[in-house]
Amino acid sequence: MENTLYYVGLDVGGSSMKGGVVDETGRPLSGVSLPTEAHKGQDFGLERMCETIQAAVASAGLTMNQIAAIGVATPGTMDIPAGIILDPPNLRPWQNMTVREPIEKRFKVHTAFQNDANAAAMGEYWVGAGKDLHSLVLYTLGTGVGGGIIIGGIVVEGEHSHGAELGHVKIEMTNPRQCGCGRLGCLEAYASATAVIKRTREALAQDQGQSRLHVVKDLSAKDVFDAAALGDELADKIVEDTAFYLAVGTVNMMHTINPDVVAFGGDMIATGEGFLQRIRRHVAEMAFPVPAAKTKIVYAHLGSDAGFIGAAACGRQLYKKKATE
Ligand SMILES: [Zn+2]
Image (cartoon, rainbow, N blue to C red):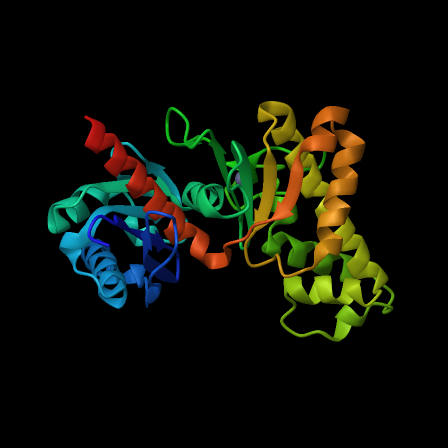
């Protein structure tokens, strides 16, 4: 297998970072995880990224000189072409931190830089929910709502690296909820796992003691979905409304770019086919008939590997571009 090309992807999150090597077909050969420890500062953070990349390569039984390209994905606002993290809410000590260039210099390997949600979308597009399709929209539902759009293999990152912020599409401006971004009426303020818990607590405060969720300690979004599955009325209403909010976001995307597939991933998605059916039903009521009939609405396929696989895919794209220059 002399001619096989290998790529490393690194997906940096608020609490841990995950790195892995993938081959030319997108198959992961390794997956390693180390704590991010952003509080230890920028130099430490960069060192930790390099460490994770090296561990991923070693764990795949390879050496660095067998790696064609690296892809690094990080959260928060960033300047993608410049390779700089700007103002990451979960990685405060990393404000204005240059990432791409030092990693490229260290390993002397072409290094791509991308937003984490965009990278996850790229992973799903390459070998997951969007495999063999032309365009994909990905929502990642967790503490926040991340978004990524891929059209014809191109990451829609926008002119100022702020494209595809699908969690901050406005869905309600009458008595809007405040979003984690500080602005009002964003999808994330309604449909993230955090928002589901907040909406449930508010509903419980108004409830006369019927819901089984009254006795649940440390309420999670999963508790709410589980209770809904058991027929809990209050929980069912929360889940139904969440599906509606996500459908509003989805229809806005369908009427903007008319994608092949809209996929939902992230921690909150361990909830069975029923939740998707609810989203599809609301989409069918709100969307134009042709996209409503033709757009696939599915769960993402790659779980928490989507980020590093997609980051590797971005590295692969860069390698191919450089090879033809
Ligand atoms: Zn927002």
